[in-house]
View 1 (cartoon, rainbow, N blue to C red):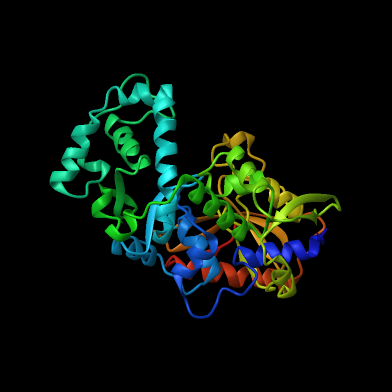
View 2 (view 1 turned 90 degrees about the vertical axis):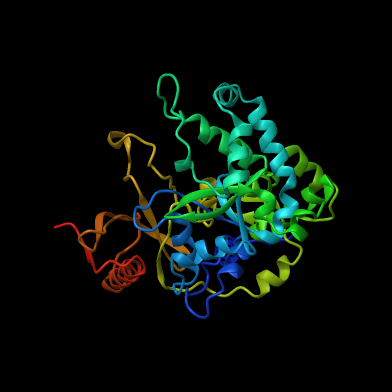
Length: 384
């Protein structure tokens, strides 16, 4: 059985997720998205929204308008739900039909959603979009009913979600991150929308594509990558493939069994040491999204605390891990003050047993300057 040491696993994972090389050179945004499989969207604009930061981390020639331009063109990417709202290469749309069915069934079985949908005139929402063209939530005026709770939403938003989850509507474009919905056949090119694959073929593609983007994974990790198949479906796929098991070593020396991409030997042969450049990693970056995997690989215990009450946070509201080479060396809390043109450092923490020498501090300062320029800020301010 092939056994992969932890040092090689770290290099492999950083290379697989696009963080192994310096973020420079010619820019191909679609190549980055395809390599990752998808890019998660997030509304929080702490410094830069997560999707923009993720792409910039792979190539710092990226600029924020580029993703919206790709979406508006209606021939490169589409938006839908993986584990969360994401942009996905349009080529993958035929393998996403089962996800539309799965999410529709999930909503149909959800008591909470069904209660909210009972106040919603879904056909009327669809009819307006059919007649008027792409509309955002701002085109509707229904109000939230009952006692306001964290998950409460106006009926029109629930209806738009339902139609979007089921694939009847698609994201036409975004304006200042506001999503515009249109009928899917007016957004997705006909030659792509009409491609039909069997359910088994879709599952087979999803599993292979996930494993390709994980390099090494358990059935659960494959399942949670796209979150477009159930664990039993992934386990059944695994039993019917000829992929041999391997073992990989965690940061604390334990050995875990998994399966690997078919070209794993070539991937290992091609490994080089990751760039020594210090990187500020977004909390929603695919390299750290699976917190359990992150801890097993790097011994880095991390979670985002945006939903944790301030008094109970261990670190802060929006804290960025700091990656140097194949090690996480610290954490930093940042906030953009766009009115004053400042990138404010709110807090900074060194990881235990990591010495912060003058050169390392210099690397961090250089990366902070680059991040500030990326979002159009003039200076970096450290706490006094």
